[in-house]
Length: 282
Image (cartoon, rainbow, N blue to C red; front, side):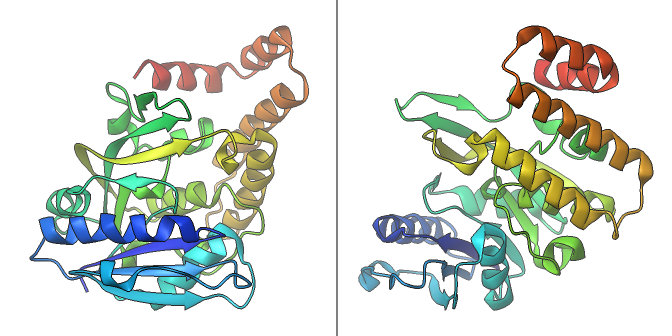
């Protein structure tokens, strides 16, 4: 296989036929590629239901987890079964353009991974770019993942070579959903890997207020877990201390909805505030 699209399904039967249609449309636009869709059922008490006639021009593989593993565990289950040289991790409620895979494959060539641009759409239908101006060009700056956090909104924006997935992500398993993306990309970069840049908009992330990424308390908890997993693999005390300060800032601002305290935290951590300001300016 050239490309494996791995999609965990959690109580998401209503999404499956739409995913089939998306992948079929992509396969039609990239007839030179062998594409497989790996659906991982992470709510095993609910059997998957779908219209098999929609499986056109791509291969389908079903993985049934024996118990709920969470997003990281489910993605890993799919990875173990995937046969593609390149991997696309795709969430059940998001969407791809019909040329997403063809576009990403064109830009990745023989590189380690490629990151495209995309949209975030709220529940009113309003869309905004996930990267503005020059932000996309900063994704290879590993320092920023410790000073700021995950720069890539979703792995659905990325096509990654399977043999470039870092051991810290592939061999461990996170218990708290949210920060496995940060662990994946930070390990990828610390391994000396590199993203190619695809300026095309290939992906849309739906933000409806109930996403894990919208729950800052859970995201901080997950980020602390990811940082602990990473430490034995990459012993860099400087980065560890920076990230601990960054998470402490985020936690303090979450606990105290106080503008003065927020500005005080940024003043006391001026190096982080400066990096964040520069990145947000694009």
